[in-house]
Amino acid sequence: MIDSCKLSPESYRLIRELQQNEVNEEAVYLRLARRVKKESDRQVLEGIARDEARHVQFWSQYTQEKMRPQTWRVLFFMVLSAIFGYTFAIKIMERGERNAQEIYRLLAHEIPEAQKIAVEEELHEEQIANLLDEERLQYVGSMVLGMNDALVELTGTLVGLSFALKNTKLVALSGLITGISAALSMASSEYLSVRSEGSANAAKASLYTGVMYILAVACLVAPYFVISSQGYLYAVGIMFLIVLALIYTFTYYISVALDQPFTQKFVEMASISLSVAALSFLVGYGVKLLLGIDL
Image: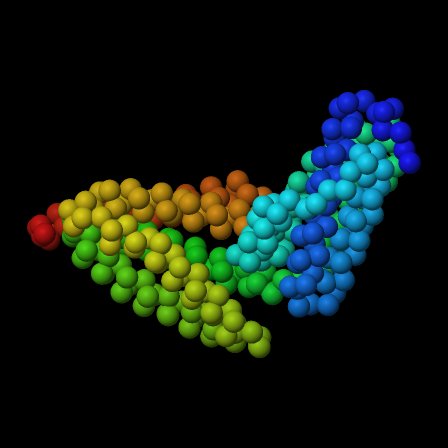
């Protein structure tokens, strides 16, 4: 048994925090391992869970406590994995471990073994980066195509229709018909494109493209169905907020899952969508003036 009285109060607090984190992470990794189909990924997750259990045992020598997983935190990561995939959930959790590694280094002057644990945690990141190969990440290109194309095309279309028709219900109907037709067209184009490359996964690629497109369509058209017929300006404003929220969420997902820079991609996608929307407004307003149509 180790005498915890020799530790400073701050070190003791940090150790309790680390132990609780390790308990939570062990529980998450074990639950994810049961849900993963790929055997190599399952072995990686189970191996990391064993390391976390060993770390828990080590820190418990100092705290003299047996901690249980925090249900809300474990549930959070399980829900996250169900929505965005286990790769995304694990990498979000690993970001928390990067902060923990700094704590390990602070403790190393009192507990030399902490440095060894920090090295093992860094190894976990390498294992995850090298071995995790979730199916949906193989279709990120198709997902980007569907989401980006829908945001760019439909944002511009809805803005143009809004200022031309000035009726949310007409805009909603036109946008929904246009969006669904475009989704089917984009999905079939993706199928033919992937198929021409000799890939056997053309159907899945087209499915991801179509689903992401329709999801974007549903989100962007929704305000027009809810807001009164004459409140098209409010609908446009809410739609822009939804566009930014979708771009933020999707870009964040890609940046975490694929370890890509977030800010640059977010600014790029947002700039393109908003620029097209502005041009569409000018086109819609110009056509209205040119034809002298006032609905």
